[in-house]
Structure formats: C-alpha cells, structure tokens
Image 1 (cartoon, rainbow, N blue to C red):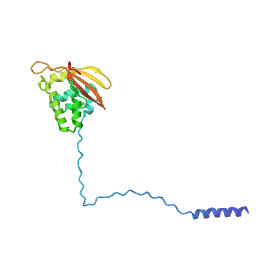
Image 2 (cartoon, rainbow, N blue to C red):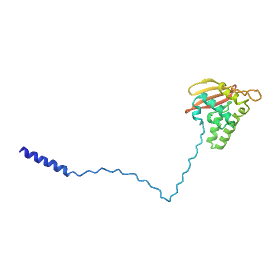
Image 3 (tube, one colour):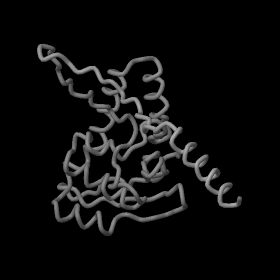
Image 4 (tube, helix red, strand yellow):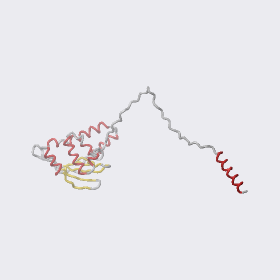
Amino acid sequence: MHAMRFFVALLLVFAQGCSKKEEKPVEKERPVYNKPDAGDNFEMKPMKKVQILVGGCLENCSEARESLFNYLSALRRDPSGGEAMKFINSVELVYNGHEKGREWAQMWKEMRANSRIESIGEFAKAMGEWVKSVESEEAFQRALLDGIEVKELWTTRAVMLFHPPPLKDGTYAQVWRYELKTRGLEWLITGIADRNAPN
C-alpha cells in the first residue's frame, strides 16, 4: 500500500515538471542609433576659445610670494603687461586708491567689452614701463630674490613690498606695495600702490 502511494506521488511530481514551459531568457531592448547616411556631410567645428576674464595664472600663483615673483618676472619678459595681467584680479584691483577693478566690472556689465579690454591693456602697459629702464637683467633677478618683503601673510590675504633694482640712470624706481587675495586656488593681486599712497 505504501509502495503504491509512493509510486503515485512520484508520477504526479514527474507530470508537473513536464508540464512547465521552458523559460527563455528575456532579451533587453538595445538602443537604436541613427547612423548617418554615407552622403551626409559632417563638419567638425572647433570650440570657441573661452576668454578668462579674471586671473588665469593657475599653478604659477598657488602661493602669495610665488604669485608676486612670477608677476614681476612676467613684466620683465613682456613689458606690454599682457602676460602679467593673469596675476591681477581685474574685478577687485585698487591702484593708488582708484578702484580700477570696479570700473572694469562696470564696463563689462554695460556690454562695453572692447573698452574694458582696451583700458586693461593700457593699465598693463603702464605697469611695465619702469621695467624697461632697469640697469641690467642681473640686477633685476637679484631684486626678485632679495627685494620682495612680506609685511603681512594670512590664509587668504597678503601684503608685500617690492624694492626695485637700480635703473640705467643710477636712480631707483619707487617701492611698490602689493596686496594679494585668494580667488579659488589662485593668489591674485588686488592692490598696487606707491608705498606711501592710500590703500
């Protein structure tokens, strides 16, 4: 009797297994991409160069003293001042008490981009005038090493003096006072003045 029941149960299990439909793996839908026809003409257009409006000195100004050193070096290499402007915060710059940065920012808001660029260019050129009269390259390099005097140094602000080298006529250019502040990862110049000029 028990053998009969076991045999019937075994038949039921076997029949149930056979009745199951074979499951097929579900295929995921693949995205359809529109392939261009062979006759289509595709032109790769170069990306427009983005103009950096403020800063741009990157790894050359990651520290305050380094930034001033490289700014002065850039003035020597390019007395027109164009290269040196990367080290200047053209939004906040104060020159001998005059808020040049505010003037330039206002020009930008008024969509006077060309006037802004021209004004910055004139300022940059004026900043490099004295460099042309330096006595010698050796004297300039010596001033870079010995003439930068750190007056204040905080985590986001620094004040330094630069004692220039002698000029060709035997006189000295004025002592410059620089204020630098951080903008992102860059230390940028926000103030340039004669040492005795108002901040």
